[in-house]
Image 1 (cartoon, rainbow, N blue to C red):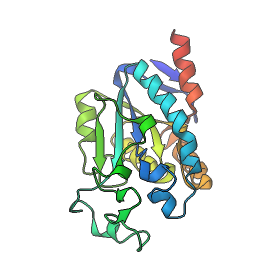
Image 2: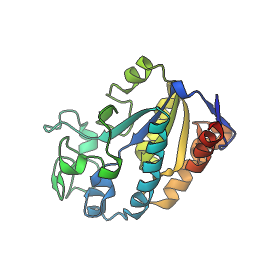
Image 3: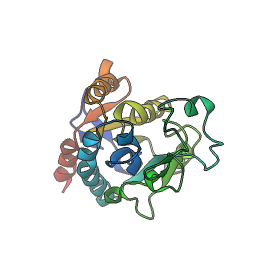
Image 4: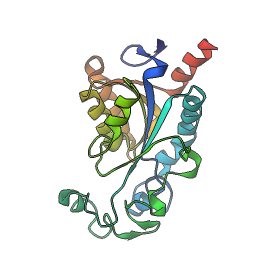
Length: 223
């Protein structure tokens, strides 16, 4: 077992049963001029984590961990988008509308693609999810069960929405979860900080958290 110095206490995991899930590192959310910035958000905190996520990906690939990417996306006819979700947000620029990088949150559009620096490799599954959580209406759980995965490392955006939702879904399904805290971000730093505190409160009610350097230290010890 590998042991990471984490909060609220050390996180133990077996490499053969662990996967990294990178949540929604999409151009429309992260890049200046995309959907996120068009809504008035400061994309700076999201841009800042891209090198950290890239380093995490490199580590996972070097250690032959299963790497899974997600994208929040919908079919072109929006038939998989709940009406309540369509009604949320900015009425002037919503899901399926034409944005600066194509139709917003629609599969195949430029803005829906993962930023080039974090592009999935050909052998890495990409889960297109219609909801905030990575398990809802996707094949993620089936994929994890087929591979015998019991432990999950999480990274991506945004901390308080899709990352937190996915981690809570995983926890409810019995997975032991570690959030790499400097490999996730929010448009609102206070939301990011509050989510980190909530997830690891009460003895790790949802899971553990640790910076990337703590995970890297584990593998240096093994060399």
